[in-house]
Each structure stands twice: as C-alpha cells, then as structure tokens.
Image (cartoon, rainbow, N blue to C red; front, top):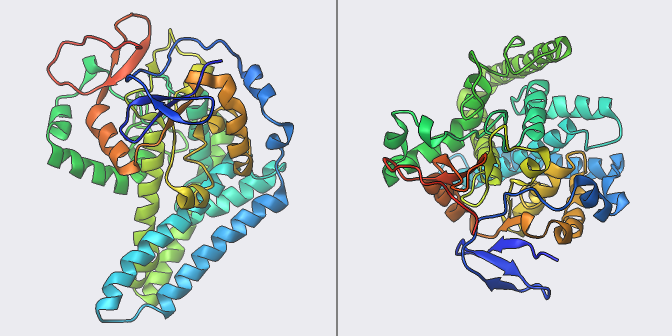
Length: 399
C-alpha cells in the first residue's frame, strides 16, 4: 500500500511510516499521473454516516460562531476604554479575534453553498444568503462560480480562481511584481487585504474571459442561464441593502465606529479567505493540467491540507486541514471531514497531500516559488510551478 506524502516543517517531502512517524525522504514531486483508484473506491472507504447532514448539529456550530461575534462586539463597545495605552492594544486584538469569528461564519455560508449544512436546499440557500450578505458577498453569484471551481479544479483552461500564468505568457510586469523581496511582500499584503473584492469585481486571478467578468453583473460571462442571472440580481440587492444599512448606521453612530467594529475585521476576513484558498491550491509540489491532460479526479486531488493549529483548525471548521476530502465530496458536512480524511488516506496513498510547514513560511514560499507554471519535461499536459525569470523553460518532472 502506498504511504501518504507529507512534508515536515522544512518543506521537504516525507513519508509517513505505518506506525505514524514521519521519516525524512528526498524532495519529491507529488504524483501527477492518473491514480490507480476511482472516486467510487475512495467513497467506499468513507463511513456512510460521514455523508449525513444534521440540521441540529450544523446549527450548533452556527450558534457558536454567532455567539462569538456577539460577545466580541459587546466587549469592543463596552470594555475597550476611550483612551490610554490599553486602547491601543485592545483594538488590534479585537480586530484579529473578530476577523477570525466572522471568517468562521464565512465558512458556514460556504458550506450552505455546497448544500452541506442540511438536507434542505432552501434552508441552506436562505441561511447562506443571509450570512454572506452580512459579509458583503453576493451569495448566489459566488456560489455559481465556486461550483465551477470545484468542477474544474487545477485546470489551466477552465478553473475559476488562482489560475497561474504559463511561463510563455508572462506579462511584462511580472518581474517587477515578483523580482524583489520587498515588492513581493507588498504585493502579498495587498492581495491578502483586497484580493477577494478585486476577484469579485475585476476577476483578478480568475480564468480569462473574452470580456470583463465580475460577480455583480448578471450578464457576466461567468453566468450562463436565466436562473443564474436572476439569482445574481437577488444577490446584488442583498449586498446593496446591507451596504445601505451600514451607511445609515455610520451616519447614526459615526463612521469610525463602524469602521472599527466591522470594517477592519472584514479586512481580516478577506485576508484569511485569500490566504487559505491560495495555499490550498498553490504549492511547488501541486500540479496543474491543460485541457488535454486534465480529469476531474486528479484536479480534485491537486490541493493541500494544511495545519493552522488546533484552535484555528477548529474555529474555521476544518476547511483548511481537510480540504482534500472537501474537494472530493463537497456536500459532506465539516464535522465529518476529519474522520473521512483518516478513512481515505490509505486509499489515496501518495496522492494525498499534507504540508505541516508553518503557514507564514508556506505563504512566503508560495509567493516566491509559484510565479508561473511550466510544462513537465516528460511532455504531456502536466505543469509545475516555477519562479525563474529570463530562463529557457526546462520543465519539471516527478522524482
């Protein structure tokens, strides 16, 4: 039986021995060939109860997150002093904590979009719409584009987000953006803060379309059916209505009050969202495929489980540390994904990717080493991330 590929903190591939210990091994590309198993083989390994969605259990996590948001808001308004040195320390702590709490609600809304919250699609959509609207996300618009991401993950031609440049198609400004560490750091910070709104409005990092694609235009090329376009309008109406409510609140309570208690935490939410999704699919050992090579299963497996620490893993409903199984079975509720991951790892073997590199180091490595994709030197339609400018492409290979 193949053993799962893992990487220890140094970033080198390691093999997990049967006893559970990670043993050092030579750096090795994750496998990109067609796997010797099918989706049905993987599903058979998962206990059947892992696919069951419980309204009561899902609601318990929702209430937990809402209680955390409410408690933090109360502390911010009632306990943080109006002046003094304590205030200077308390507000950043609030922003960080509330950003995490709101991101937890974001993940619940994401789960609703996958129909993983309950057995009732109407309930899932109503709740997901309410939660995402409160986070200024057009729920149905993002739901439809995100579904296409899951349907085309790791495809260079049809994936919806974090689509890398081919080396042969690098724009003139790529070297300026990534050629030096200070500029690279500034770009990474800007992407974390504003990348998601720019993706929604300008399709930044999205797949190329013949015209501007955004999530607020019902006739955007992202959407293809009349039903989708109607739902885009509904999503827009929700975001506009909530934005007006925030405006009226700012008029009544003060702009800086709303900015402190809601605006800055939302920047933290955007940062977490971009960081988590970026690191799911961007890594030197994760392949991409062109249309001639891509298939759904290998695309779904082209993601990485990462460890954000026990607290954040739990707070974010294990979206980061069980993302492989989420791509295989998107409608599985989050509270079963850890058990399901343990069940499928013996089947996946080396096709399972887990990286325990500290997140800050992993983000910097991806920003430094994953600037474009270049073809595997064996030929075919497999591509690997690269980072060398002004160098003739040599291609990458497994092993």
